[in-house]
Length: 274
Image (cartoon, rainbow, N blue to C red; front, side):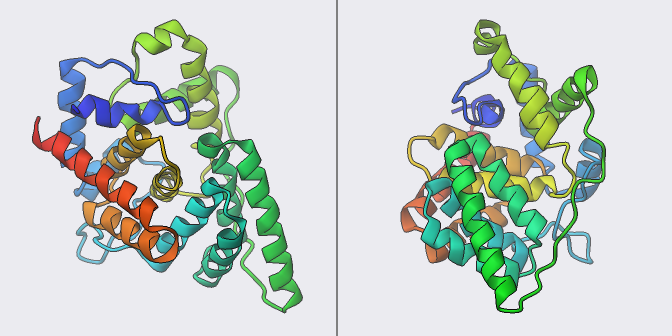
């Protein structure tokens, strides 16, 4: 699988499509992925959020912090519709320092990958957990709502297109979107606009959540590999992605961990062949 297949599948998300790309776009995406370990390069690519978990020596992080680890089983259990595991994961995540707003944001994002029914069920389970903790006298951090106003109309389309391009590493186009242009319009205005413009959850956290969601489901391996590539593109290290798989293995499901590991290796193989 070429780099354009691995990276630009980002636009597929829940659609499972493959846009076409030029040789120049392929080269650009590989270059962006190879410089993913340089925080200064990332600050030029994407100034909305600072990459998480950078240490004092300015080297890229090689491990996930406790909050990042907590995102993984929350996202996977919600996408799989496993309410028992989700309740446990939400409890653990709140104990690990995730705010109520951050967990809620993750569970809202679930609908883009696993559908509204599982997102709504997950939010209902979270409400039960938060209420039970409150009754036990646990005061969880509320967290913050987005502070940046979400643009409207043409400005939202422009913002979403810019976000999509940054995540994918190049402008996104292809035969499928010529056949069904409304699909890309929905992606740009709603997913990459309405959702990715919300600044109460950074992009690396959103991608850790997305990779975890997709790993929890069978039959979406191309999208899983795609989001492994996007994660690398915005500064998540290979070591962190492998740790994500380890967390899935230990705290969710070995099969999900296997899917994640296979996607990581496929993505690395695709980059080596360029």
